[in-house]
Length: 114
Length: 112
Picture (cartoon, rainbow over the protein chains, first blue to last red):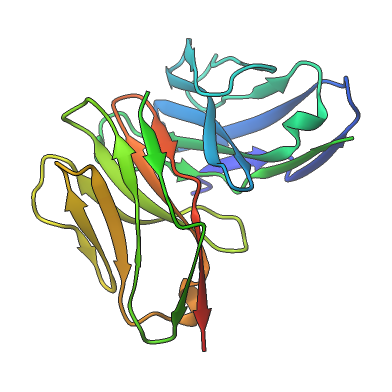
C-alpha cells in the first residue's frame, strides 16, 4: 500500500518558471490538501479538496492552482515561480468517513526557486 | 479562521525524564479534533495522538498523553520516559470539518 506519493522529492526552479507538483493516493480518500512548511511558521494550508471536482482555498493560495479531476490525484501548479515560494510542500489525504482521523502525509517536496 | 499557537519554539529534556509541550487554539466551533504530529529529520509527518473535542477523557498512547482543557482551549502533550528517538519537531493541529490547521511547531531535543 503506497499511501500518499509525491513527486518530485527535490526541485530547483528559476524565477518565472512554472511547474506542477504531483500528488497521488491509493486509499480512495476523498479529502486531499496541500501544505507548505517554512521555518518558524509550521504548515500552512494552500488549497484543499473535499472530493473530485471540488477545491477550495486555504490560508496561502496566491501563486498556486489546483484541480481534482479524479479521487486519486491532486496536482499543485506553480504559475510563475518566485523566491518566496521556496519551501517544503506536503500533500495529505484522509477518508471522509473516518472523521476522527488526522491526515496521511506524503514525504514532501523540497522546492528551491532561484 | 481557526488559529493554533505553540509558544515554545524549542524544548529540551533529559533522557528518561518527562516533558510537556504546550498548544492553544482559537475557535468558535464546538465539534472538532486535535492532533499532535511528530516530524523527525526524515521529514515524514507521523501522527502521535488525537483527541476528540466531545470527549472529556484525555487521550493516551503509551508514553504520550494529552491534557485537554476545552474551556481554556488548551491541548498540551506530555511525553514520559523520554527517549533519544523522541527528538523531533512536534506540531499541534486543529481539524474542523474540511481542513486542518497547524501550529508553528516545537523542536524537542533529548539529552543523553
